[in-house]
Length: 294
Image 1 (cartoon, rainbow, N blue to C red):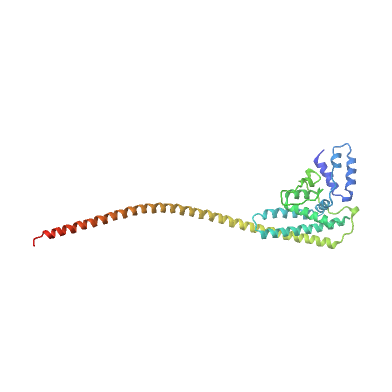
Image 2: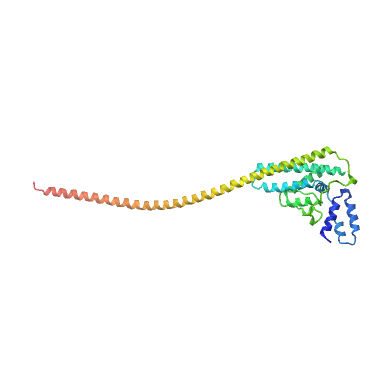
C-alpha cells in the first residue's frame, strides 16, 4: 500500500458532493476488496459539513486561500514587538478577510445544492481563522482533506492531525477545481457571489497593506532599539567611569581629611609652643628690667 495512492483516492472522494461521499467511499472499498487499500479506504471518515465547505473553498478558490494563509504567516511575523493598537488593527483585517471568504464559501456550497446554516458558517470562519494563526492548521486546510472544523484557542497549537482524513494529509495540497460537479450544479445568484469575491479581494488588499505597514513599523522599531541599545552601552560605560572616578576622589578625600587632622594638631601644638615662649620671654624681660641699674 502506498501513501500516494491512498491520498489520490481520498482527494477524489473528498472532492465529491457531501451527500455522495459515503456511497462513493463504500463502492470504492468494494472495488479494492482483497487489496491493501480496501481497509484504509473504508475507514475514511465522512467530513463534517463545515469541514466539507472549507474543502470546497480550497478547491474552488485555491488562490484566495493560498493568499489568505500567506497573509496569516506575514501577520504572525509582523505582530512581534508591535504595540496594542497595531495588533488590534491587524486582528481587524484578519477578521474582515476570513469573514469575506466565509461568505464566498457559503455561496459555493449553495451553488452545489448545500445550504449552510449560521452555525456551520461560524465553524467555517473559525477554521479559516485557525489557518491564519497556526501553521499546522494552515496545512490541514490546504490539504482539502478536512473531516472536522478547526478552532484556534490561543493556548497551545491547533490539533490539526485529528482533523484530517489521513496523517499524510498534512503537507498535501488539494488540486484546484474550476467548476463544481455538473450533476449537482444549480443556477446561483451571481450578485452575492460577485460581492463576496469583491469583499474577499478588498479585505485581502487591506490585509496586505496592513502587513506592509506593520513590517515598516517593525523595522523602524528595530532601528530605534539598536540605537538605544548602543546609547545604553555608552551611558553605562560613562557611568562606570564616573563611579571609578568617584571612588578615587573618595579615597583622596579620606587622605586629605587625615592630613588635615594631622596639620590641625601640629598647628595647635605650634600655637601652644608660641604662647609658652612668649610667656617665658615676658618673664625674662621683667627680670632683666628689675636688674637694670637705675
